[in-house]
Length: 408
Figure (tube, rainbow, N blue to C red):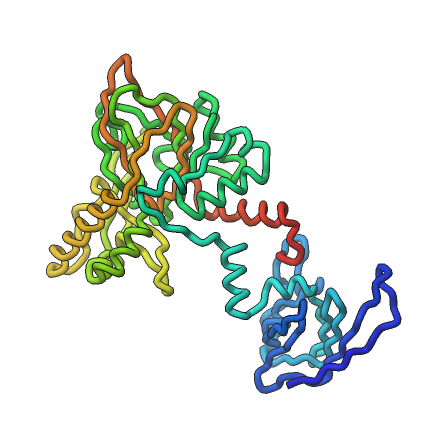
């Protein structure tokens, strides 16, 4: 372990006495530097500190990018001397290089599991909160259109709730086919697909998509045949049907998947391991398309966390890429998954001026059949956004609203 010695500096910085601590010996076995920040002892590997030097030779400040020449990097570099002040730390390395780090900057990059988890929740991505259909009125937040457009806090609140629960409503939207554009522009930009930059959902004869019918629309995720599937769906209700029916169905697949993992582990395993071929074939706006993607119904990462749901009866291809003996067990698991989602679904009807926003790779959505005629129509304007853009905007807003120093 290293020994520290506090030396009080006689210098005055902004009328505040600055304390300097020189560290003369280091943890050569563990290759870790210990730094005390706000009374807490934090550890930082030597190699990581040197790799993340913030000087102009190693880091481009306006681009916020590392520019050190890694072909000349020595992973065995060690500190020669460390000097700490109340708000920064200077390190002289054995290779002669000098680095300086802000204490707030170091604090946000703490390696302790507790701090790593805090950073993940606060900056990386908000934690997801699962829900059952009977909780829908409680978890589905309402946000005013004009406030979202003109208030950074309102914009942050909407996006944060959307990230947490996978669904949120924007109310009081103008009756215009372009009103949704301003909402998207506040975040980033749309995810364009072969259906266009935006799309109109209404009854269309001889359609290329079963969503453009007035009949019952089975629960599904949109565009599972895209390898880079749209992350979120925004549906602006311009005109809601006056007939019975037309209600939206929404189900949180994370809730259902967690239930299956605990109560039906074999069916859960099949839905996470067996790849399915998803497809869409047709012509839209004069563009012929033949889309294919393969992925399981429930996609998980190496930590077992759900990253994406693929589900659509119409868009599940007829080619089954799995082994013959798993076909029937997979179909049973698939049927159970849909049954549970119906059991856990919320049913509600949007009104004129609502923009229903929801997580397209987490929730299943559908619609009950309704009557369509010359005197009774239903019309929605839809757009997609990627989660990359939403999370990016959330982080920028959090840094701005909370004035976070050292996060960059």
